[in-house]
Image 1 (cartoon, helix red, strand yellow):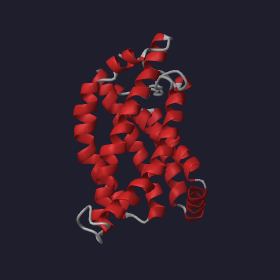
Image 2: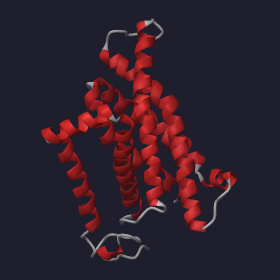
Image 3: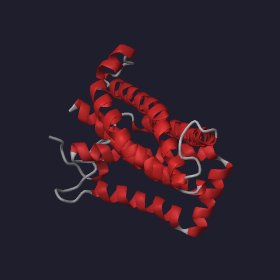
Image 4: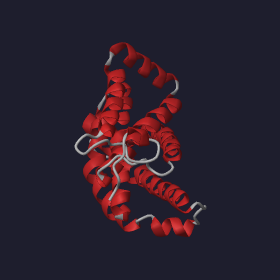
Length: 235
């Protein structure tokens, strides 16, 4: 059973005080509220949109560094019942930022590709925004999405093993501990068709400027789902 500690233990483990009062819950929600307020308040929203347009990769990094990392912490909270600092948290956050840069690029590539395929009669339903959004989401998730989630699982497992054992794990050790059965049966077979394809269909129906905000919000869900799935595989 995880020992409950006071707020001073934030840097090393559980972030709760006494039973029934989770300081970590309030901190996590406060951070989320600040982010939401920044995105909703018109002056700061304008700054966000301007920066995203001018520096898409940098902003993609920042969005996922913060929001997907919050999802990691949330996934740990759900599984463990307490706020426990993920092993190698800063390294995982940096990797999320790098993934965010790739996601920023993939949104443009797959949306343009799906629209080109529709315009050339390679896919049915040209002229309907919902059809364009659906095919963009479907193709992106079952190509780039599968790769992203697999790479995330590998790197996340590598970091966990490194900080648990104090030594660099081999590729074979990482693969052995990745929980491939869970990755395929839960992450690929369930979350992709039943969550990510519908969620990103909605995202791609929004005007491009708002897709950035929606992707940032989904970053929390992405981090939470993948963190939850990995810990479920190891439980």
